[in-house]
Length: 225
Image (cartoon, rainbow, N blue to C red):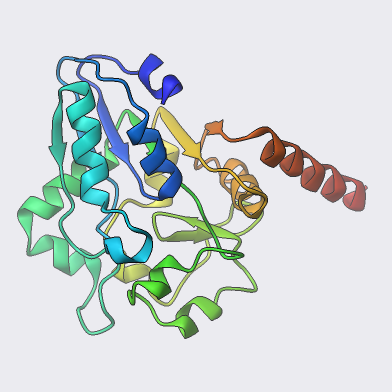
């Protein structure tokens, strides 16, 4: 929250992802009026029953803290198998499509990271089947906003990727500042993948996780040599 406040500038466009850690960051923001701030949701909602959080609420509270305007992606984060593609869905919902266009053109993006080791929120919320998650378990290490990648930062195709209502990994690469906020041993490999893939260029984590990341990378380098 302190770092986010220091890099906030007038007329900035801020896209916010999802997750428990991101919610904690928003809860810790100090009220500070910044002219022209726009806050946009990075993806649709996952359902607060999954982990007691509403993604619309993250955007609303951040906009309130900076005295800016919030844009919402009022849709499921991942559409059902019979709902068609996310592209078709947004094309028929202009307001939703406009919000995602703004999200993709952000100056700053702040995202949490999911781990296949411990996070199964999309399956818990009923947005995907457990079988769909199992299909990528041997290749992917984590995700950002429903977009999965491996330890080397390469995107991993999923059975549900066309149904994800949200920004893409390439949108993260295009942002001037892409902040990843995550902690815990289970998030080490997802963070390595995100850094290698250049999906984030700023990392905020705890000391234990940082040391674990270094250990994994050093062991990997030693094995290669």
